[in-house]
Length: 343
Image (tube, rainbow, N blue to C red; front, side, top):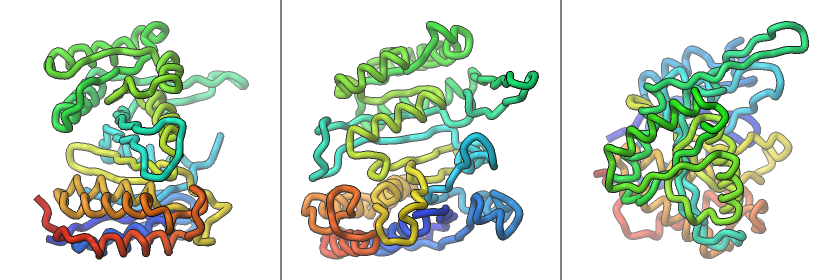
């Protein structure tokens, strides 16, 4: 079987880490057909569109994307490419597993938790306007439909992956209507899953609880803005955003991406760590049913980190992006499991 994938290299270090990841994916033996499209400032320079219609059309065809980082202007400029794609294709669940890699020393060994973030509304609805000069208003949109949908996604995942507990993260003590609605949807959903423990934490207390004892958490489900902040916080437990994967999932479409920035200061220098995109690609392989290849790629990454000989400079190694990819490919090729078997 050949899997068609929309490839969005991004900008900055994006093309380098995407290219390294594509090389590893192809080394698994799984067959891909790549449809490559730009987004962001580079796309606008060529097409006068930040997300060209050809990219939209490609995702509509493939229903699957692999994306590198795209720079988002701060306090002005074009809207977030990530947010736009998530809303366009109803990628309502942002899925971020947080787990330690071998040989990466942190203050929090043995972390294994999952952030499930509602991906389409909340403050990220983007409904803002200026009331009068010097006064702006932003609307936070919370709906029963989206809140129930993300809660059921979290509970379904927890049951499927044999997870024991879900925390709903909220600020319903202050935002009694919006966060109150989200919380009621989580409570109603929890009643359908009596085999999974359910608890609730206020978001500010959650941040304190995380840095004192992150091991109390298993799966965490939350609204858009809270999820954006907390998932980055949790990435710090295992070494940073350059090491953790991200997936944007919908009922009919999925886009997998690194959650770090575009790091333009090191772009084109063969310095970037492609681990986050590679880990996202492992999630993509599992999503499309190529479980054997996913396990082999995951094991190859683990092996390179365990050996510690070909890691990148950001984690104390001496290798560049390409040499790191070479090491992962070599680890793949020496594995004995069959590739591309699917399920």
